[in-house]
Image (tube, rainbow, N blue to C red; front, top):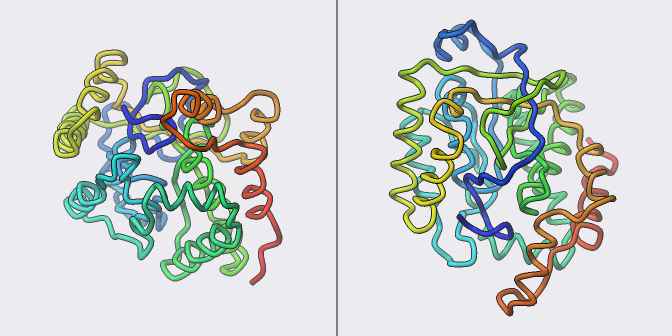
Length: 297
């Protein structure tokens, strides 16, 4: 798999996960398409890297959200995978945002290291404009897990975009996040979480799409997917969980312990593979403060 300082689609690193089933949950064996028939909420999917959509393909095919992707997924090797995501979205009839692979991974990491706070605030503003333009009511996106700084910053930008758009439209846009690290089917209950359950046919299609995507992207991704399926089993992908987002609570964990991307970066610098370490307190926390600032309409 790609390293923690780059983009990832799947990883089997253990994390404390949550599981519950309010609004999006259908009865056992009910097609996710059936759950979404009728006037469902106008939805958006906002992710840091192409490939994250593979975690929630059942919901994506049913909800057909507006999809924004911050980076092209090129990572350290410079090989983008945005085209694979484009083909997948076209097949699912999901609309693409104007913010779609607009930066390389290196460019985004540079903005984090250089503390270009205006860049992130402006990008959150552009996301907010799109939420208003499309009258979005529900936003799903990356979780704050401390695994990759792009994922965490993406979630923070979504938070600001949702707050600003909610103010401008006079409605409360729901912001939910799905896990990118660990088991795709979390083991415990959390209040406010939502779950989509796939039928066997929907699961088979999802798994086929995941394998096709990995095969097209090539490299370590094929091995990564095989290892994840072996560890958790196919059925783990039959449920897609969307957790209520509490940004301050998620960040509080990094006041006690370093996030994975920081300790991984330290090892990579010591090995001569990286020049710099992205650190929570020095680099990510100031971005969080800037994005948490007053939302001007």
